[in-house]
Length: 126
Image (tube, rainbow, N blue to C red; front, side, top):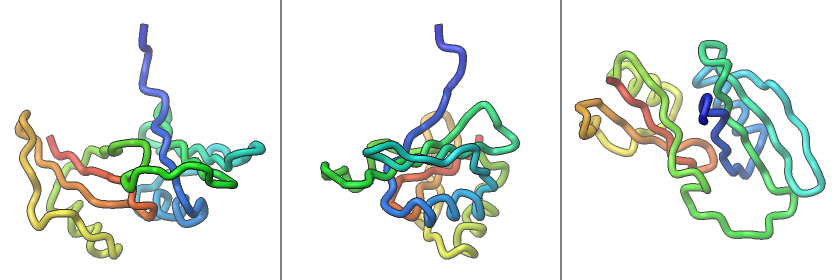
């Protein structure tokens, strides 16, 4: 029934800042940007994983209060080396949520951090 994961949508407060964050830090590219009467939207893809996208959404006239972590719990990225990934964050003025990686139930190293809209992001090293 399910063929693939299509995209993850993240509510943002500043579209340009959000696009810049995902482009500069992770190499995402804009596939499409536009808006309807209620919402501005941008679809981002990564050249190494073109079948999966991040949809950034910004309400033109906010009418709801979103949870501080956004409507998506978190978005995870696979990394080869957790220590290098954490150093990369620090070099780009992004502080991880903990000083050392956590170990998941499957033995993977994980590290949470926040994006420019306080969205919860995670690195995973299997």
